[in-house]
Image (cartoon, rainbow, N blue to C red; front, top):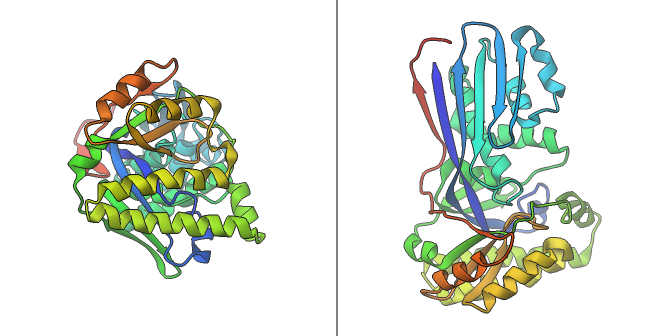
Length: 340
């Protein structure tokens, strides 16, 4: 049996960090807005006729193997830790090769690990006979990733990976709800530039430290999160109305909010790229993920994407990413084959 799965990464436009429990419980109406992009995470599982389990990450260049009788060791395996913990969770009863690959640059802030998480869950779940219904994938992904990073993890990234498209994720005491946004995606795509800074995201912005400060009652932090919540809801409305002037204004004004949350959200290299983009037709800069490196999404003037891309492509270390908005989320295909 051969199982192949894929899931899209995402650009987060508004609401990041407020999706970490329990922060959203303190801000009524908490929401995030993101869209899926065609930089995919992929997983391929091929069953074997022996008892070997071979795990390989193509993009990280790491491979190791174990056997079914040593399965319990995967619980504390540090090599390819996410893959190991996922395999340990699903406990397949046959040998297999699992190969993963991610098209997003390492540390890009595009939710690469969360997206790979969903892609692997889709493939492993099929391997064990569809043990879980798809509505269980996101809670499983969040729980296992928490075991890996050892602090609470945000939820918005799993929704873009599983469902694709443009989404508002609403957070409330009675649960989380994804709202698919039917918007002018052609215009959104035409006006967004995604640039990898050449600097992998680092620990400069620590979501766990922010979470602890919030829980400890930091009043300034509470007010910042109220603004982050409002930006998300206002951006949702503007996108639905195709009010691109307001979209640009919200994104432009949100960047200082994020910098108040953590001054280390940008590096000197990122600040230079933002200045260059603004000088060539960008209206707003959105640091992807928690910042401190990785990618920046720029919202550009109408017909201004080309000039911004050209300006950024000339900077040492920067890479303008080739992407398309991805309407489809997780895909899992099964191919009948002889065990190898």
